[in-house]
Structures are given as structure tokens and as C-alpha cells.
Image (cartoon, rainbow, N blue to C red):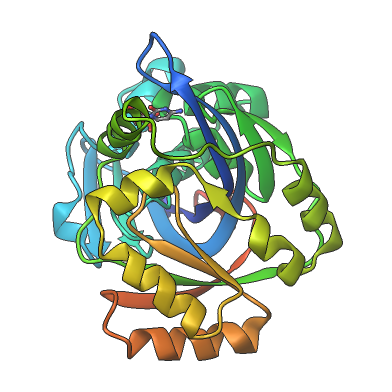
Length: 309
Ligand code: C5P
């Protein structure tokens, strides 16, 4: 008898940077109300999902050893959630190849979860609609819907309610990856603490920034980048101030802490400038390593063409 060996479904899971991240007050459910503009970046993880005897998670790449491979990993939760929906056992092996820094403020874990939803929808022929996937994504975490969506989007609520944003042209970024990560809840708590002391200013609206995106001009966009979590990340990791200064000194148009940090994201005039800034920053001794990336890119997408072969 000819047996058909199922091939894994392979999904590219993009990282993100928040071009604008305005954090409102702490809500009773423990989350903060956000107004944010996300951009999906080419720095990505690759997630392969294949049928197996039992649910298993494998992680390789930089920092792989600090990523949990049990039910603390969002991909595990994503598989269990869709298995209940499909009324079957979650017997798949999920292999994650990390390109996105772990606990880096670039939503790598959320991207892996979004990728798992997309992969299982194909592997198990679930035929779930975009709306269904969005609602599973929102249950998994605030940044998971954007990782499905990709591109450039305006997020409200805890970041899970999305509207697409018109963005002309491709923007070029240099990412300075830090040694170690920052815990997102800790950074939000630090912001609440700083605000209780009355220090950090709050970002205004994102209208001007969204207009700059429609022009496609990086120099117009650069001074409008802003992140309310930056003050909190810098308070917890004061060395990031040096990193931010070094990126601008190396020729970036602007630098911000990405999300809850500690990755710093530098917007550059074009691809050549990004390569130059990355080389200089790599030699400046202010970060663990540097990466060049561009955005916007699509959300989690299957990159091989068949679930079976
Ligand atoms: O949604 P997610 O599980 O990724 O969020 C992780 C943590 O980040 C939350 O438990 C909360 O402490 C913090 N958070 C927040 N407000 C948001 C999103 C996340 O306070 N809008």
C-alpha cells in the first residue's frame, strides 16, 4: 500500500515595531487601553507544523534555550484551542526557528502563535474564516491579531482591534538586539509606577504619523515615531539610552525602543543607509547584535505550497 507522508505546513511569522504606542490608563482587567500603529517587519520566525504522535514544541535559533516548549508557549495554547474547535487531538509537532529576539518587544511569541493558527487551519482543513482566526488570535494575546494581519495597522483596545493603515513605500530599519529580554507586564507596571510619580509625558494622537505614512517619506515619518513604554523600558534598562544615541550618531533618522523593549529600532533613509548604520552600530559595543529589516510585510503566511505530498 502506498502511504502518503504528510509534509509540514511552513509559515513565516513576521515581527513588529510600534511606530506609535500611546498607553492609556490601567483597566480593571489588568490591561492598558492602547492607541498604536503597528508595522510588520521582515525579521521573522519560521514555524513548521506536522502531524505527530503527541503535541510537541521544538525551538532552535538564537535564544532558543530560554523559550518554553510546554503549555507556557503560546503555540501550545494555539494548538490546544484549535484542536477543541476541530474536535480532535492536538497531535502535531511544532518547530520554531527563531529569527525574532526572544522577549525583545517585537512580538515574536505572538507571531509564532499566529503562524500556528494559520498552519493548523491548513493542515486540518478547518476552513476557518478570517474573523474566526482573529477571534482565536485575540484570546491568545494582545499582539496575535496583528501578527495575522501584518502590513501597517492601527490598534485599539488592548491592541487587538485593528484597522488597516495606508502606507506608501517600504521603510528600512536597523534593529539593535539587547543581551537578555524585558518582561512586558513588568514594563507596563514600571510605566504605571512612573506615572504615579507624575514624570513621563504622554503621546498625543497618531494622525500626523498616519499622514506621514501615506507620503512614504522616511524623513517625514522619523520625528513622529513615539512610544509611551520607552520611558519605562529606559528606567528598567538605562543602558538603552546609549544604544539609542549611538544609532542616531551612526546616521539613523530616529531611534525608538520597540514595544516594551529592550530591542531598539532605528528608521533609516533607505536600504544603503540601513546597511551603513548597522555596520557602525555593530562596532559601537552598545548592543548584543544588529539586524537590518524592512516593512511593511504581510502577516503570518504559508510559504510552502502543500499540506500533503
Ligand atoms: O496580551 P498579552 O498576554 O500579550 O499581554 C501580556 C501582558 O502585558 C498583560 O498581562 C499586561 O500585563 C500587559 N499588557 C497591558 N496592556 C495591553 C497589553 C498588554 O497592560 N494593552
